[in-house]
Length: 178
Image (cartoon, rainbow, N blue to C red):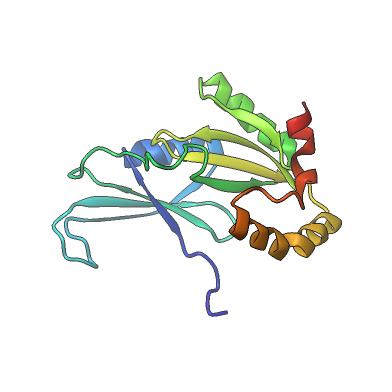
């Protein structure tokens, strides 16, 4: 495979400085780079921007563009709000719950924890309206083996029926039984 890793993931932001400060405060991400131009290098369009880069750990970079001359940010209205999100892995459920507590103390609405069996997670929105998930792993090799064994059968059944196959129903039994 020629791909080594994701170099960076870029989203749009409303305010670059506010975004840097928010990600530092709540997720302890370091601000590593800023690039600004009045012209887009790839297209040569005259469109000033601030491009900021944050360290998301493990060699992963989360980037944002502030585009002051573009129409106000929106989202894909044809996709449910819960669907498009960025999931970030953290060390433990305890760490996740501390972050949740800090956010809620500042009035940020946090959903969860949600038990996905392989991991537990919380969900919230950054100041730009991007949905984020923090995930703390709770998986075992046996769980991954069970899922690996059924992934192609699940995909084939889904392709034919567009209904959720039940091969891995065990993953959310706790969430749906409560």
